[in-house]
Image (cartoon, rainbow, N blue to C red; front, side, top):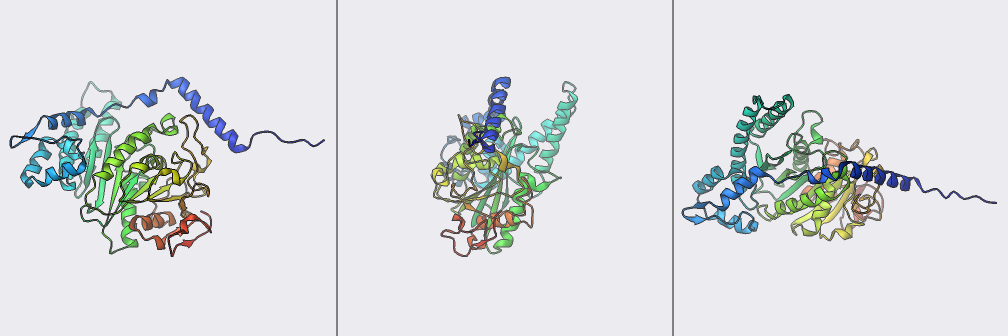
Length: 405
């Protein structure tokens, strides 16, 4: 008699094991990881002051009003009045989509200076533990770094693990804008790293900005390092669900809706950041022409067409990236869906042959960074596709093929 092997395939075992681990975490944590987030009290206080404030006897507009409404309000003010509001309500103005970029930079500098003084005092507060004093010192040094000459801080919130966004280039005069959306373990303290700098949002954005200028020297570009959402802390419960992505998507759409001008926007999304971009995609403004994901665990859809966006969808993954071993499925809210570099997904798959692991996509000199820069500046003819007959080539004349990534 012929015997048949009825044991599940290896990928099914991986999926079952991953889900078992998740359910054990659920049972032992009581969902505390999902319920630990709280609203930003310092920012809320500043917004409350704004809501009760006035200028020249006139009430200030709703801080949650449409960006266009807030933009018209700030345009009606004198430079002195804008500066006055930035000093009175620094956190509110610094995080207000629709406020001019220069005003937000000024307001966030004031907020950072204030928070630096707070942390200086906490460093020597005897009521704090040694660990608490050390944390205060780390935050104080981060604030000092963000206050460095020429830094353009578009968003800042000191609450909890902290949120921040920084602009490279001239946002008001840009002809192309790229938004770098990072993944897990992104917060105020990891926004910038000395060791392995291109694995952190600042290094990613700086490298992309330089690569875009090299790719298209005549194109005025701006790149935003966007860590203005509460990212999952490590590869735990939060990283396995879409809760943080859903929260981040609201903030990401608000950011893009408040960008100045009409320049095309490219979303450059890394790791869990691609989950955020996937959830945000249906509501992104039409000016978003491209969504490029690298090292993606999934975008919470079965295919690119389900993103319900008119933007081109690009994907890349290096062969040495561990993320390829995650279960590409979604079951009961756990997992992030189909593999974006699979043929069935339908994204334009770019070469990332020399990215070297999960954190190497923005390393200067790599294929991956060059391709992301090409997408960012709209130089589609210069990008390298990952394989023959891929959707990457469809409707993009001049693309080349480099074999499998």
